[in-house]
Amino acid sequence: MSDSNPGPSAVRAPREVLARYHQAMRDKSADDLADLYAPDGLHEFPFASPGFPPRYEGREEVRAGYRAAWGATPVRVEAITDVTVHDTGDPEVVIAEHVVVATLPPAGDTFTVPGLLVMRVRGGHIVRVRDYLDGLAVAGARGA
Figure 1 (cartoon, one colour):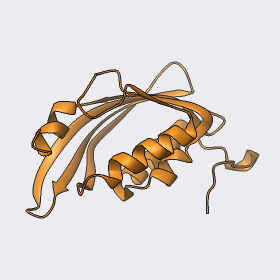
Figure 2 (cartoon, rainbow, N blue to C red):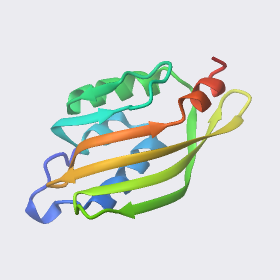
Figure 3 (tube, rainbow, N blue to C red):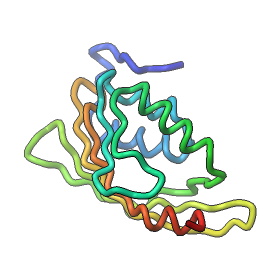
């Protein structure tokens, strides 16, 4: 069941949206992730990395992009560690540092990908994310 349109009592704060974002990553659920976005939400990857588009524009592009990306890899997110959330002077914006710990079947090799998110949440939905991830760590894990 999707909760992409929470009622007034269900509006989520940026830290709660971030927690749900991390859970969607652990679950590799493109639907749960996309449902966190406003219909016109923007997800940007400011650091050009092999295999990553520069941005996803809109909730449905986020859904399709992550569905394709996560569906094309056997990588499993085991944990998201070292999470540090920084509040800003803007109540809509949080900055989150984290490390994604993942495994690559079938050998089960473990690797880590550090990242930083700058997330703007308005009315309980993500309107913009700037996703600074270590694309070289991802490429290295994929043998690229």
